[in-house]
Amino acid sequence: MSAYQLKWAAAAAMVVDHVGILFFPSCAWFRIIGRISFPVFAFLIVEGVLHTGDIRCYAKRLGIFALFSEIPYDLAFSGTVLEWKDQNVFFTLLICVCLLWMIEWEQSGANKVLWCVFASWLAEFIRADYGFRGVVLVLLFYWFRERKAVKTVLSCAWMVVADVCLRNVWQRYAVIGVFLTWTYNGKEGRKRQKLFYCFYPVHLLILYILQKMI
Image (cartoon, one colour):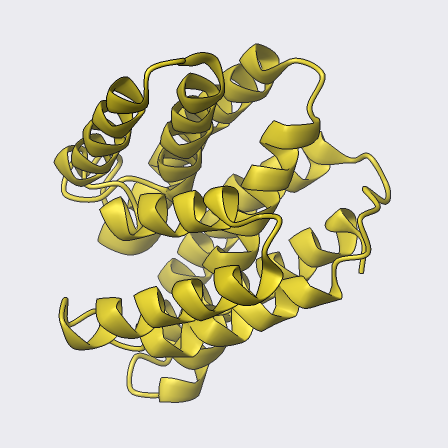
């Protein structure tokens, strides 16, 4: 699968998850399917950083859509225009891109570690979706990008740890998303980034409206 196809496969799983949260909270299958999405997004963030021609522009675009998506996110999941207890996943992805940017730029190993700690703390502090768990997963995909088997084992192990030790319900099923990244063929596919970015807030607004109609 190309990056474009993987992105939309993850988006479809994400929509299923959101539908489950909002309309079928007692049905586990919606949440299980939804766990597929973030590992794929984490994988694609690493690929994006490694292959982008302008990481500054990449981070800026994520930041804009993180802000643009926050009101739809809060409306869908809290029913209010602004709710500070959780932030949408674009903030998590933005933090990860900036972290990888610093790792690529920084020469000191000690400073790289400090950036990793700071990014993990920041994701938790602002209560970004997936928090430090998402940051660690992105780091695993980045550090072991040339060692597919090691990357898979460690990423899957981290998903199980997040489930069992951190009591992050359903997270063990995210291993399916890790294995889905094996289908990546190294090709970018269609270039419709803005369409995908717009899809996120739009689908949240649609779900919010449906909630109000039912």
